[in-house]
Amino acid sequence: MVIQFSEEALFILNVLYKRRNLSPHRGFHSEKLRDLYNKRFPEKRYLPYKDAIKNLKNAGYITVIKKAEDKFYISNINGAIKALRSHGYISDDGLL
Image 1: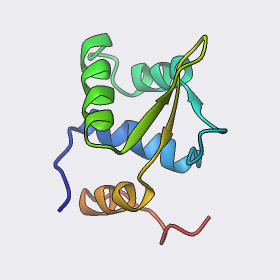
Image 2: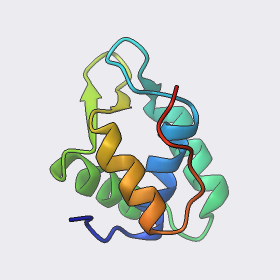
Image 3: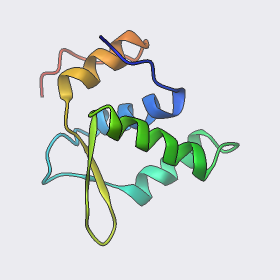
Image 4: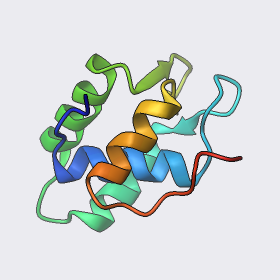
């Protein structure tokens, strides 16, 4: 079963997927992700971003690496691919 996510959450998941952040050793910086988010959704700022991150974490799709600056990575690649495909995002078969 695929969870229905907001457009903001799918954007974040797609950025992490495209950048191949699939390992705890290769997390994506939260500030860079927030900057990309703000460019894509200039009318929506901090609160929808935090809600999207929270929803993805609670669903088990992403994990946070606690550092001086938090980093994110996809912890459930199969679920992420299914979610992106079901919402019309183009993705390959999960081959890296």
